[in-house]
View 1 (tube, rainbow, N blue to C red):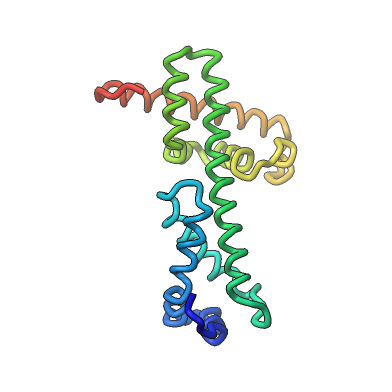
View 2: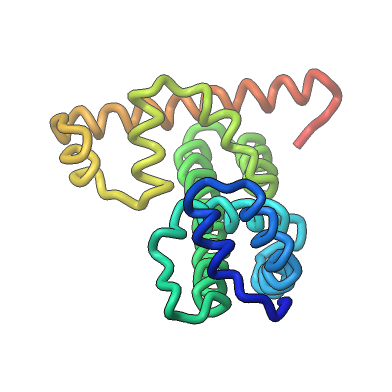
Length: 192
């Protein structure tokens, strides 16, 4: 990273100065890219993680102590964002596994193959977006935020039985959508 005192630019950036953001970005991007490249689970994720780092830098700049070393603070931020990215991938994997487990009981080997392909591609987000909000809330809190069903009931201020029902119906909806996606691909000549 360039040996440049970024503190004046960081102050201006925290006040919304776009030019200051460009200076900070230009001064730190190579360092940030290299560190993310070393830590990222997959190389194709580096650009996305880098975007997350700079978004978080902008949001949390008010927590930076100008008396401390900026590079150390930035490194901590980068490491947290890479970890968050890995957790996000793990959550997608857990949702796919939950669907695989519940589908494999009833739909047989064909559904298992399609779910394995889905897990490998982590293609669940578009299907997740098809859920009604009340179901999506439960799924996101359960699998993306690792909340227990009891915690979800407390957060949403609804009975535990309602959470369990929504969880069940959301998974059922996801299985149905996934099966429709699989059938659509088979009709197009693609088989998982």
